[in-house]
Image (tube, rainbow, N blue to C red; front, side, top):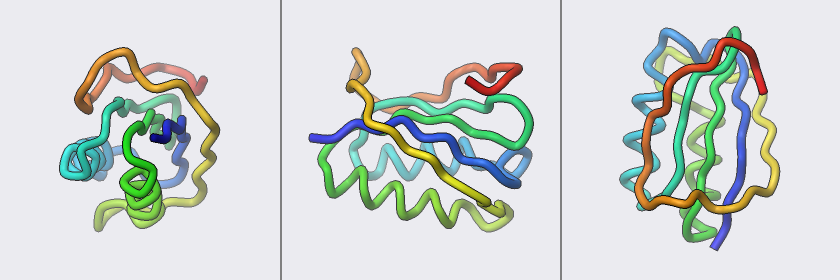
Length: 95
């Protein structure tokens, strides 16, 4: 089991990144969430089977077709308190 908090920067807003990640994470059976934060940044919490989390991280580096990922930072995190993967409301400033 693995949980990681990620910040993805680049052209990741206005290109369907959150919806794309929602689909990817749900297909991999992950728990967690995704949301926009600030300018050109998406934040997510991924939790589940270690290999599934790693596969999702690799996919995040590519992103959907219109995205241009510049960087991803990931840090260890506690698993979310609820099951399933959800899209959260956007924040105005990065965490």
